[in-house]
Length: 151
Image 1 (cartoon, rainbow, N blue to C red):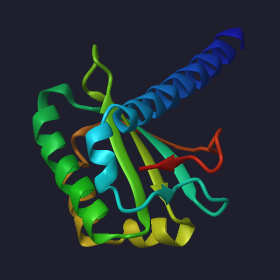
Image 2: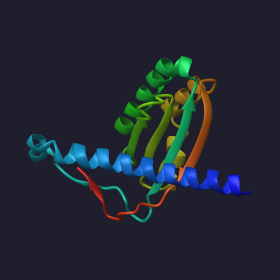
Image 3: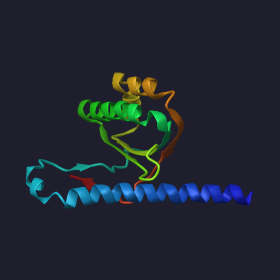
Image 4: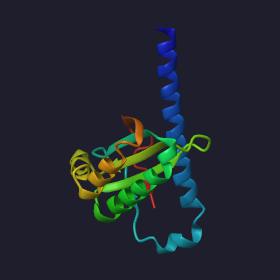
């Protein structure tokens, strides 16, 4: 029982660490890109009460990581380009374990998420990577900074 509690605690700490790292990357990229700030037309508020926010924790077969990343890139680019209610899909991997990935997913609402998982590009990604994924954990999340804007 003690070991199980420690595992749960480690998972929670890892979740918080990954979320902190993703937010740090987003803030750093926004603040370090001053010359492009004038060309930004609008800001998108991504943490509205109705948003669906999720972390996808994925472990991929290391021998197929390159192939997996091709599917992932195609799916994320299509989703961000074609689906206005997909607000953010931001994928990162661990430096020392590049086959362990986390995707920060933010949708306008639950309906936007349900539409997303039925799109041809998502279904192609899901089917194409099914035998590459060794583990998948979907964690619904609550934003810690409501009203945060990404430029």
